[in-house]
Image (cartoon, rainbow, N blue to C red; front, side, top):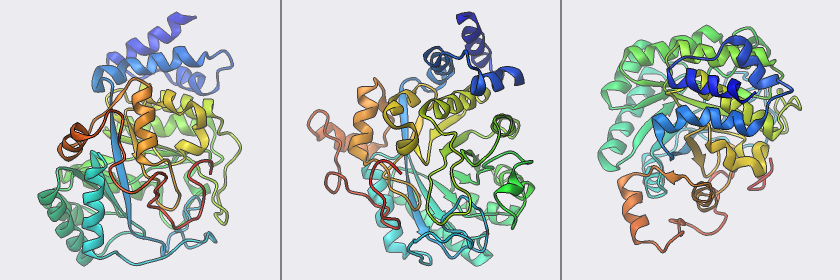
Length: 361
């Protein structure tokens, strides 16, 4: 039996994906042994990333007020979730949060804007902010701003944008079940526009929205086909008022199987444990670092998450290390052993829009 896991690892190490039948088995096989599966997924993770863990900080620079109807999102026009809606933050706020991200050890600062997509004027404004962040802090920048065409992608590329995020979220056949105001192909075209402009595309999926295992397999292979180098894997957070709620499938083991599948299909990609990490993987959270080499700290767009000190402690206790930036490395060198709290106090959370507890969504 262990030969099967070894074959999965060997294929990934050679840059090959598992067969479709093996991919379905990874998610649904009743005879799966979780630890050998995670060890198989760890083989390509270790080859390409060692035991380093990259951390990212999300900043919701524009919240709510969105005309799209993505059913999983509390910012969509059809959501009745209680969130604080606001237009784009001031430059001073955005830059202050970029500094906080750098000091917290983030490899990448991710600016997220709600809405269908930016106007040309708004894109130029984003470009100026990107330039300023890149010139001021030793941190990469990712932007998630909805649908982007080639002209806007070039403007952002000229400003030095490192990555453009636009998640596929699910398979093409399941997509109409979660959104009707734009198409799956429009999302794919945004990724292609970014790549054509020389920006690395970032795109992932959400598990737990009523999809079948075949849908998860399909989107994992589509991301491979598109050569996406950065893949966030989200686990649906049940937010009261959203049209799409959890389907009851998200056990910790299911989440870990999904991460292992994405790693084995995309062996060289940065695989990120994204939204829903704390509430869905729960006490098995450290095991997620075997297939994944990246995660978010300090919460998500409209929900809270574990703070940086708890997250860094988990990384260290599992035998991994933070792949920090120069600012973080300098601060960490001066801190007492094991002390990672670089700002605020215990339990500080920067995502107050929905008043949920730090753990357990």
